[in-house]
Image (cartoon, rainbow, N blue to C red; front, side):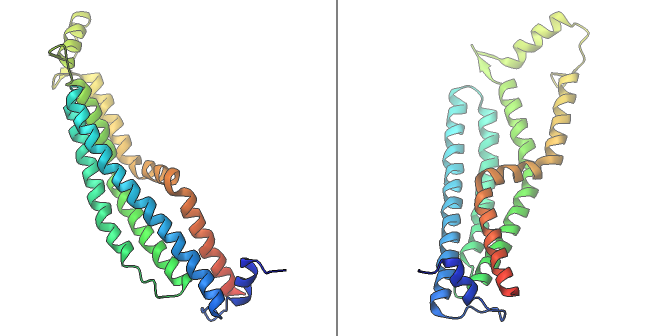
Length: 219
């Protein structure tokens, strides 16, 4: 009976950190290259989606009378796109001429750096996204009049003693500041949750593959 790939790996993977035999070497190399190529495609697709999506939202925001939200989202998306586009250069520079284990470890190191940078950025861009959405609707125009003017007129009639700061109810302003603080504090974790939704399965597969290689080296 023909041996499974796992069986061939176990026979061919040695403690001296080298793969013995071209057949086993090719198996590892093909699997590693295929894995990283798949990630590269996903990464490129998501970057293109960010660029196209933010441009469409920007245009739609002007048509819907909420340009502040569109501009804010576009600026944040542009920052994310530019930063990750630059980070992708490190991905392209990973040496494919090393053995599979070192290849995957180099990729994992790049991935850790990329995640770290985006987690730091997320502490700023999630609050900006929220603020852009709130300000976008607050200053939106409907029937020739800004929403904030309509809302404040009605509130002042019902609550003449309402405390107003910067043209907003004080209580609303405080709630908004609180939410912004929470988003800034938890921005990194929120990004990590988003990351797991998109790339979680791929990253787990990467860690499993590296772990299998390390176990084989230790035998």
